[in-house]
Structure formats: C-alpha cells, structure tokens
Image (cartoon, rainbow, N blue to C red; front, top):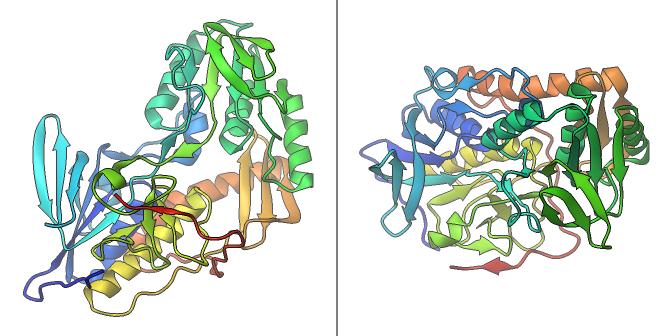
Length: 407
C-alpha cells in the first residue's frame, strides 16, 4: 500500500464523512489539533447532531433537544457541507456530494469514513411498512412516535428483539403509554449481554411496566394485525417495532475500498483502510480486520474513542509520523428502563460483566449523566482540542480475525 504523501505548500484537506459520534468528534479534534496545517470539511446529510442513544425517547414523542451542527462547530474551523456522499474515487482522491439535485466535488488528502450504521431487519424488511417500525434513526423514531400517538387505548405493540434497543424501546413505550399492551419477543435470551444481577433487574422492570417478555420466540413473519413465530404460533400486533440489530451501509465496497465480511470498511489496528493509505475509518461503519485484533461492539461508547483516535492518526500521517495502534477498553453497559429506572452494569475492559451493577433510580440518574456527557464531550473537544480520553486496553481476538472482502 503506497504511503500517504501530502503537499507541503498548502494546508492538507481532510474530508470527514458523517457527523455522528465518531465523525463529529474526529472533525473537531482534527481541526483543533492541526493548528492551521489542515482544512477540515465535515459532510453530513442532516443539519443537526442526532443523539442516537436518545432515540427511544424520541419514539414516544419526548422533547429531546436538537443540537445544530453549525452551533457545535462554531469557532472550530470545521467547514460543514450538508449533503450525502454519493461516490468516492480513491484513485483521484475525490468525493462527490449531492444535495437537492446539486453536486459538489471535493478533493481530499485524507478521508475519514464515519458513516455509521442503520437497521438490520433481516426477516422483517419485506413486511408492510405501515405496520413495521424501528428506532434506528431519527426519521424512524419520529414515524414511530406518530404511529403510537394514533394508536387507541388497548392497542397491541410488539417489540421484536432482546437487545439494548428493544429493551429501552419497550420500557419507554410502556411507561409513556400504560394503556397499551406491550409484548417483547426475543429469539434468544433478553439482556443476555448483562450480568446475572443486572439482567434480573431488567426482567423485573419489564414485568413491573407490564411488558410481556417472551424469550426463545423467533418472529419470522408479519401481517397486518398479527405476527408469527418460527414454531408456528401467531400473536396479535397492531404495531411492530423491529429491533433486531444494526448493519453498516455497503458504500465502502461500492467505492472500491476493502471491506470485512460484514460489508463494513476494513481497517487495520491504526484505523487506516487496508486498501488505501489516504482513507481512515471510525464508528459503526468500520471493522478492525487485522489478525490478532478484535473490533469492539457497535456503540456510542466505541464511536467516541475511535473518532478521537482516528483524528490523532490522521494528523500523524499528515506530519509523516508513525501511527499509533488503537488501545480501547469498555467501562460499563448502560440501559434505560423508562425515565425512573435504569441499569449501569460495570464490565471488564473486554466487555465481559464484572459482576457489579447500579440499578433503580440511581442507575437511571447515572445513565442520564452518561448521555449528557457524550454531548458535552463535543463542546469540550472544540474548546480544548485533544482532551477527550478513554480507557485503554489491548484489543485481543480470541476467535481469529474476521474475513476480508476486497472490491
């Protein structure tokens, strides 16, 4: 792979695609630490920062404050370009951005791919859009809020999934609309990622909220008014919320960049593309795909450190300095159970439960404080570039490295 070469007679141009947790922090850190040595352009299709970890609140019509990107970026030196990246040409280092029929072409010296992820509705995608909803994006959450508001008392809501989004969505809906019947269908175990104590608290909270949690029930088909399981059982449902996981867009492969088997941009331990030295990646849309390393789970807790680290390595590459390998460790798993209950389950650096958890009202307050901190971190990084830090630990991969697919 050829080295990254930057002309010395002008500031380098760095283009960051995506203004989620990873992309926004990367852009702010890059511009702040570059000291005029780099011009940073942030490309995003929405004019505001979406707090994805609050979308379950948006889904019930709660007033979640919007954070205009122009305000977050004010004084940072980052140029905001509203639009959607429709193509990247690695050979010529160009990005084409489209918005409302207009096209803008950007030339870059370094590109940060931080396009995030969307919903994975593997078995539900072909079902009636008027019935199946999601909480994976702001648009989907707003649409779900309108559907819930139109649902009369006694209506039946089915949540498909047993992970974090499903639990938070079910809890929020049940608390906001106690007049509805809420069922949670998990193909496996509900909250299997938590410690036994934390999981027991989640199950008690769901029961207290009136949520009928059904484990080992894989939903395979949805019709208007009902859904069916793999065992042939049929369940009533006026509205279905699919929370079956996340997937990255297939753009990296379409643009000729190396991808992992998941379709995510394949990067090495320094977060640089395996096929192009001028391309770096962070957030849900990338996967660390080097032997001996493991990619941490998709999460806000992952995206922020990856965004900060990719900014540091982009700057190092522009200066001709060696890149640093990512070192990252988790601290906790956080779950909202409505506005008055929550769980903060402490974990080891490798994300396995440590056996200690904060639950109940205090858990809810601590989870809220963590949510606020993620937004505050952006403002602090703008004012004091380079100050964001995280728990650092080796990224060991016990089960072998993921397979790589090259376009």
